[in-house]
Length: 351
Ligand code: NAD
Image 1 (cartoon, rainbow, N blue to C red):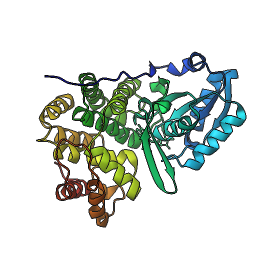
Image 2: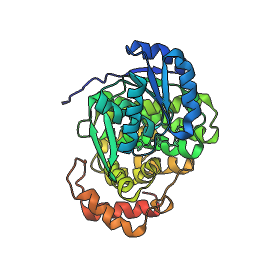
Image 3: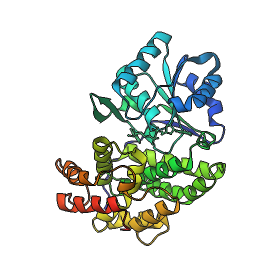
């Protein structure tokens, strides 16, 4: 028998090559007239292109977005938006830029229009993160959910292979944990399986031929589905471990997700058989954990924590931090087993 709660998400999505052409029209549709464009310094050219598309509705440009959303950056962007009389944010970039828009929207309630250029999926979630005094605070709030998302695969062509692969694995992680989420529901299970299928078939092509627009479109489609899953259902041990490793040891976000995922899935193998069956089928593999591990190798993404900056003497601390507060996971989370999981991830052994 099925029992579930399904809360319908409220984001308008425009998907396809040329979606950015609709920027001005979509800003108007939000009832806004003056948009401030946000980006990282590296993506200034993309932000300037968005400014051109906005025409007389472009209020200004803020290109100081960085990882982990420092509160000082969010305040600077908010103040600039106020001075310019902006009434809407256009976030052009990955999770860091969308995250900046969210931090400001949390305070101001101003609408965000997101133009994602990675596969992180933040644009589809009401989850925000802000770093103050070295501590990253995260939470969920409907106010930060972008009202409109323009997915234009053309903008992802410039994402280098070494970022595209891990970013895509980050999206697969949202899907897989969505399959065994405490509040999983039939709609999100369908989305998660389709997300894994799309990313599994497209990522090997994307890293081999970054300019292949067909594969880029397929990967972005998978990332949209993955972001929708992340926004709708709770995550488990994999996301918890990555949060600890990123926050405490400053490991790179998408690379950490890539390395940890096969081991987190192997950890839950017996506790979530139906989720494993669906994931394995979508991966075209006999076993979900091994299928993920083999996909990572195929796309040339990192496979071991030791290769992405994790100190070996930090494993005990990471296992302790990841087990000191209770949270949902299909299998009981205990220090010894988590320490072993981390050891395997550190060495990069096949699960
Ligand atoms: P990112 O946004 O930090 O981008 C990584 C780098 O790639 C940046 O220098 C960026 O400018 C560059 N880049 C992005 N798109 C590009 C493109 N198309 N071409 C060339 N360069 C490009 O990385 P990310 O992995 O997208 O986001 C990671 C952050 O997002 C983390 O802080 C993570 O916690 C957060 N996140 C939040 C959520 C959420 O729901 N709140 C979900 C996923 C990730």
